[in-house]
Structures are given as structure tokens and as C-alpha cells.
Length: 102
Image 1 (spheres, rainbow, N blue to C red):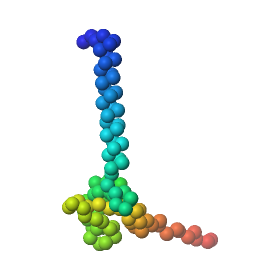
Image 2 (image 1 turned 180 degrees about the horizontal axis):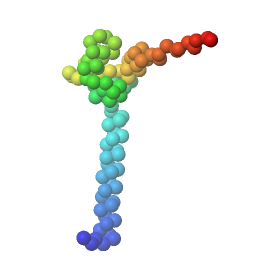
Image 3 (image 1 turned 135 degrees about the vertical axis):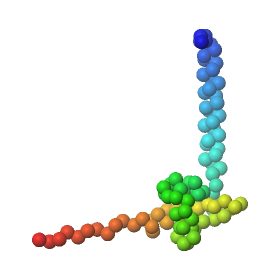
Image 4 (image 1 turned 90 degrees about the vertical axis):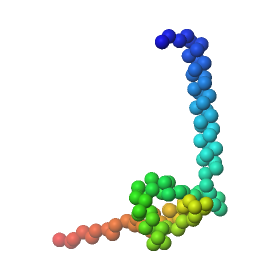
């Protein structure tokens, strides 16, 4: 397949134009991300990936009341600040070991 320089440039311009459109679309999605009271909301998928836990573990944290959640139109959401608080409370540093004096 042999294409001339002008045709190649035209293809590249179309590709770049589409990439620019995708970039604009992604920026719009970031701006319109779900929030409540100005605070970002995370959904189940966000949390599963962030915490690297199973769906069942996430359900257990909700059921036990350790992780507050909100239901909006049948979908579960978590405030980012609540997730940070949950992490601080759940994953504390292990106690330091005392060295034996000899």
C-alpha cells in the first residue's frame, strides 16, 4: 500500500482531531463527576479498585456500619471523606516491638 504525503497528513489530522475530542470529553466527565455538598462521591467499582477488596468485603463493611454509604437512584455511593476516615480507623499501624535488654 502506497499513500502520498498529503493523504497521510490528512489522516493524521483526522486522528489528532478525534483525540482532541476524546480529551475534551474526558475533561467534561471529570468535571461532572458525582458529588454531594461539593464532595466527590465514589461508587462500588471505585472503592473495590481503590481498596483492592472483594465485593463481599465491601458489603460487610456497609452492613457493619463501618463504612457509611448513600443510595441514589438505586446505586450505592460513598463520600470520599468517609472512605478516608474508614481507612484511618481500619488500617492502623501495628504496635511497635520492644527490644529486649540483655
